[in-house]
Image (tube, rainbow, N blue to C red; front, side, top):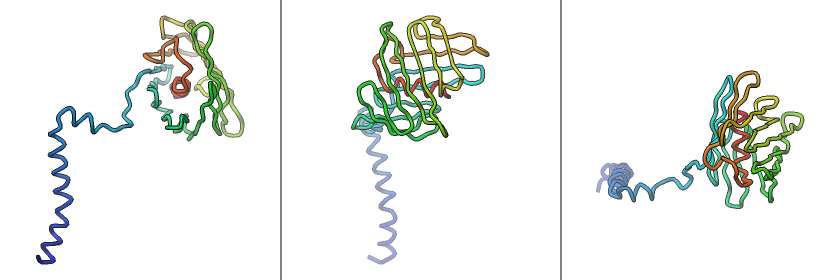
Length: 197
């Protein structure tokens, strides 16, 4: 075989492999398509929708990921969480009801009224900013790293909060984000992501 023919065959091999892979992938039908899904695929189980006078945002989560405009977090195999939250890279360890990292430290507690309370601090610029979020069947209150000085909304029905504070604000909890719920870190990340926009 000449050098020219051998070189042409080597250049054609990757193209032929690609064509063969495409042709055989189509034969699998629905089963083949399901087997080729990305293992990191995201199927939201809960969602937090925030609407204010100047912006609207939605943050969704499942048992291992949180995705929204200002949050992208993933649960690691060892149970820790890593990713981006409010424009900063974070690596967080879980211990009971505590979430701790270099920039963020939170405690998540269930309330007797079926709600949840999230409190802690976020290292911002030169100092630490306190975070306090309370979500109950009757109200939603948030202060610190939430895009407003403080947000206090009364319940307008199951999972829907709204009120007036320098314009109309509303928050809706859908699916697994609805109360009552477990002390889950993804809910805390989703609230911080949705409210901070």
